[in-house]
Image (cartoon, rainbow, N blue to C red; front, side, top):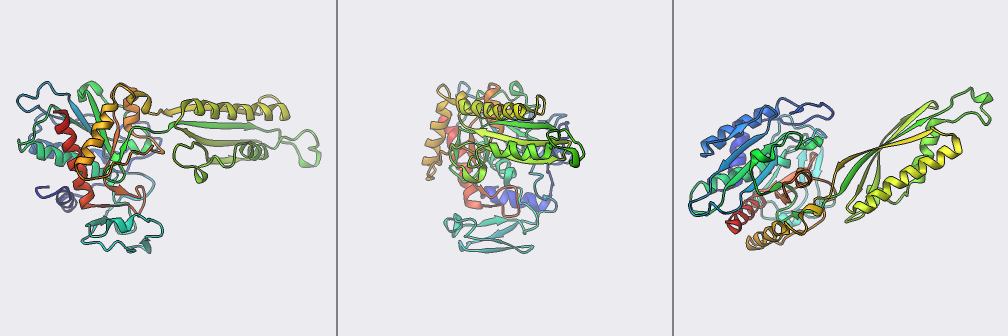
Length: 409
């Protein structure tokens, strides 16, 4: 990291490969003990960088602070947050990173029979001339979110050189973000930040403060199962009712057919027999009122089918997952967005102010009292074997957060 963030990342890979995939439905923090392996390494490195209070908690959260430079003690305390776990959707074991210097912007053979192609990823020509980092086709790279960690660590190193004025800086590396539990044991008072940024986005220049409102729904169906030979006006086939339920939802409001601010119903699982059936959905919408309408539509379909087949045939349960942080950022903390845009422009990067079609730890933290927009890390195609990032993009991300620090000083 003495030259750039990429050198530090490369050195870490040579010194230590740490698989940190989290796991769904475990109910403890961290969901996988191996996340402690990276947490302890990060504490060691923070201590080496002069972060005297660096520590890892018993639930695998890494905290550390840099005191303000003399004369800037009154500046706001800025927090920077990234997550240590990688997605369980694809293998993160024994990652073999490839660094392609002076990338030509075209199709690239990754290995394992996989091709990083311009057809699938039309942004690739814009990366021509850069040093591209990929995995070897049979694992994900882990840039989501180890790139965010590397960028924050590089920021700490640069600030410790002493020639950049700054207020108090707080850093936190979290476990289990990929399985929706990244803030389960987050200690906002311990972080001690007035406000913060997560580094967990896509291309450099992303400034995200609008995300989905998110919920999950489970539809339970109880049938009446009798011999089909004498089923006239008696049988209620639960599996068939399940198909009727799903067909009653608007077919064009699914992930395949929506973009931007358009919300959706997403059927994630279906199982059943004539006796019992179950449908699982996730619901997404940026607009809270429209999100409520989605719930009401699902309840109305259940009511209609119960009128047709009998009371208690269909029931729906809902669970809130996260909410749109924009409601907490506007208007009092919109300066976090404006200053991030200003820092991005000063770094020579075009800001990308787009609504995220997902959620972040920052969304939950914003609702818990810590305003926390999300910034890009320079990466693409996360959660699978096509994940890639560039040295230059990561360096720009470090420059952007350094300029944010200078603005708030």
